[in-house]
View (tube, rainbow, N blue to C red):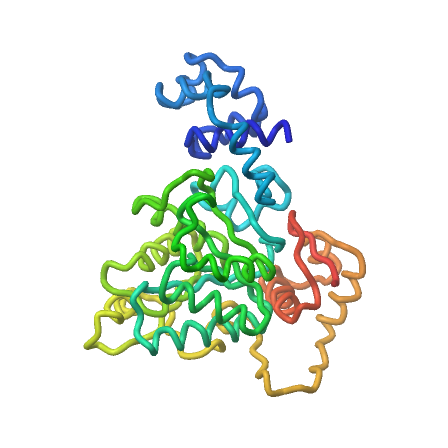
Length: 352
């Protein structure tokens, strides 16, 4: 826990990862707190933040740790092997995540977002896509907001799937409060996470910041319904910056709910009518659920499965199969969706 104390302190101070990444990777987290103000300033850290680092022991760290232990919250720091590798790749990843639940955040995830004031059609589509994708093994990521987000979480839970909710506040100020009723179900079948210290209020400035985590955790973002100024569009923009696929459902041209999604489609988002559109874009072979007989794997799949009786790194699998990286990723993704193999931190794969 000793190192985590320093990470918690940094998070309470509010310093961003890009500012300190190089120093910590070279010298370690503890050494940062041994620097003088002049040395901190030379790293490009502002005087205000430098003073807070020097006086870090005055922060309410004891209270924060007591609350974390009492609530059974796990702290996942950016140097932890279990920290989601996709999230770590974005420009400004969270220094740490507060995690309530028990799920591997490195499993294949897809985000579904939309307006807080959806139509009946929007709610129906959100639940449909979430439940169908969750049934295939995707973790459904959303923002726990009213409307589309809530429909996504409940859709995944309905089929016994996994879902992750990303808060725009600290755990002491769970928002929106009405979603406390599904908190335990989400924790049983996934996780609720936040980067914000426990006392953080759900201010309007936190939600755009939260949205980069929603997109950063996932291979793609599906926008169900969104007005012209919807926060879902902020998530879509983050997804584009992060190199993720952006999917959008087309909507009626005479409703406000569709202005944002139709705008995304004009700008090049992938039009979605069914989950096959999503799986095709992600280069995953689509198998209709009504086919109950077990499909015979290809020879390549059989070879991969035989190799993964023991955990192997991606480079080893590439050498032993002799196929291209893109083709291997396609087979590995499909096998993960089927629930046959799993990916571990460090691009290591193994048979379940």
